Image (cartoon, rainbow, N blue to C red; front, side, top):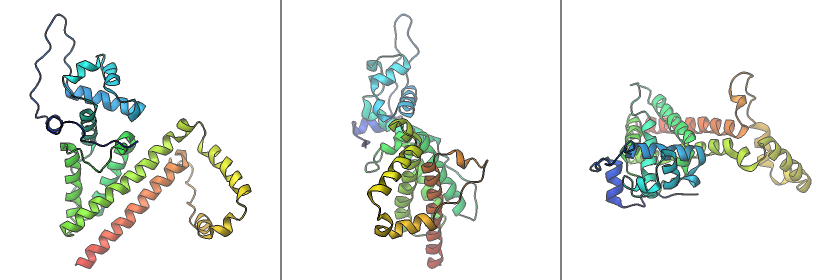
Length: 269
């Protein structure tokens, strides 16, 4: 399920994102409930998406969580499209915008990538929001500005930095998506990773007896590139195998990418 941001009214959406909206008058009448705010609505919507997934998100579901009707929400947020933009931008406020100054640009870039990975894992529905059309909110821009500043410390030209931004985000998103999927696979399918692989490995061996001859490169990779077992008590062994692999792939892939950046810096010098 892919969702495109920015489908609501442009001016109204951006006014809400940047909090340029004129405050609505307080509700009057006997025994009024505490007044709703945009921030409260967005927080409730994020909670719904975190707990139940994007498919469960609706104005009614958010209203139920707040003890209000869906109609009460429309006074503050025009609809689900605008709400999604607000949610997406709001969770990006969780990301740091400053890192300790250092002569080593690799350390803060590594830390930034790790922070963004964990943001996506905490809020996996964010990964369903297409990057084809940005939300254009203040926190999304703050995260982008942070990355550009960290890459700027490499001294590479602006055109290269621009392409590196477009490389880093998909790397983090792809790893986070695998981690998030690994965490929900057993619940969503009703079978554990071990059960799934055991059933299919046995069937594959029976149905494709010449597998090794047909795909020798894959066999060599499985034999020579198998990960080392994690030491007991290290914490990693408690993770689902696909999550461990995704996190290790992220670590190695990010390191190789940073090696490439370092080589580009050396070549420029």
